[in-house]
Every structure is written in structure tokens, then in C-alpha cells.
Image 1: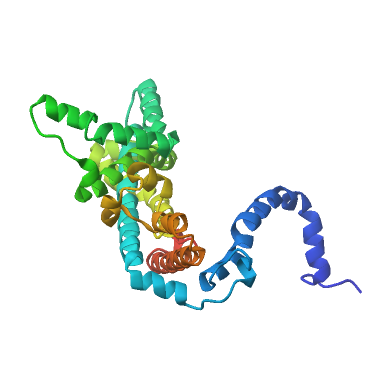
Image 2: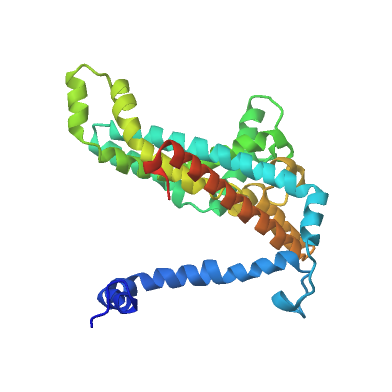
Length: 311
């Protein structure tokens, strides 16, 4: 009697038939297993009073003591606030600038100019934050920065940018958009290029202007890409870009109130006090909040626009 389909033999037959595909995907599965899943065992550090003799698994338990210390210190609330506000601003500004640039590039008729413009817009994305940090320092340095040099040449007093907390949210947002908008425009441009040109031609015949075509043809087609990128981004809304903040601001304690994010706070804890348990607790809070946010946002998208939800 032959085994019914869907039994154990059926599963092994499917594995045998798809063995080439399984071998192809094996490196990616191994990568995420080693780098993303196995290290999750380190979550236990958030509940331990870590010491090098006991290691991760044999250090004494601290219960919720690490979390209590974080919340009582007050630093975690300020870092969480800054992290969320910065990421929200990056999310809005990067996508807005990316869509705007993609539409601008798609409407250019000069092919060579469009290619050159696209390359120049993408160039900042490949620069490291170390280089951008050096550019920022040469712009805003008090003594010989480009901005203060211009101010002094007009007889004006120089501005101590590295002592002005109110200015840095705008400076950091500007550098983030400058670096990331070109890459975002490539993603949106790929969607715009795939739009059936007959729609634009029919709209032109009906007398639609360029702004009418952008509003009624381009934007609706870009919407699925926008929703997908937003859903992927909200999962990292509690994760600060350590390289960006550290290279632009450094260890300037004057600017901590407006520039300190979870990642810089955790790094500073490890460097100053070697309290690995506190750092692990902050990282766990960051991960849990990020998971909750992406589940809530995805549920909202699924409720209003089921086709564009991630799952």
C-alpha cells in the first residue's frame, strides 16, 4: 500500500526534489542562524549581575534589578525619546526626499544629465560616517569651521555649534537626509520606471498637466513601495544609528540631552562602568519595543490595506 500524500514520506520526497534550492538557501539560513538567533541566548544577561568568572550562564541572578536601575536613573527615558523622535524624522524626511528626487529624475528628458544627477545623488550613501563626521567638523568647528570663517569675514561673532543643543537635531536630520535620500530615490525610481507609460500618454491626451499625472498616476503606484519601506523602518524605530551619532557628536556631554540615543547610551555604559547587565537590559527594552511597534503598525496596515501588509 502506497503512503498517502502529506505523510512523512511525502515530506522527504519534497526535500529530495528541492535539494538544489535548499542548498542554495543554506548559506543565508546559516548566516541568520549564527548572527541573529544563536546570540539571542545572550538575552539572559539582562537578568544577571555579570562577572567574568561566572560568564553568561553562571553569573548570579539579578532579577529585574538591571531594569530598575535603568528606569530610576532617568537616562533611558531621554534616550528612548530621542531615538524615537530622530527615527520618525528620518523616516518622514528620507522617504519624502526620496520620492521627490525619484519623480524629478523620472521626468528628466536629458538621459546623460539624469545619469550624472543620479550618480551624484547616490554618492553620499557610499560615504562612511567617519568621513561625514570629518565634513561636519570642518563645517561647524568654532575656530576654523567653514561657517564660522564666513561669519567672521562679515564681522559677525562665531557660533559655538558644539555647545548649542537646540541646533543638533536639525544638523543630524540634514546629514541623514543628505546621505540616505539618494539611495531611497533609487528604490522609488525603480517603481516609477515600471509604470505603464500608456497611462501617462492617455493622461496627456486628456489634457493632464505634469502635476496631475504625478498626483493621480505616479503617487498611487509608489504607495506600495512606500508602505513596505515604512513597515521595515518602524521595526528599527528604537534603534539609533550608533555610527552616525558617535561620528557627528562624539563624547560631547553638553549635547547628550538632544543627541543621546539608546545605542550611544549602551556603549557609554560599557565603556565607563563595564556594567554589561545594564547594557543588555537596555538592548532588550529596545528590541521588545521595536517588535511591538512593527506588529501594531503592520496590523493597522493590514486592517486598512491588506495587500500592502508584510504578513
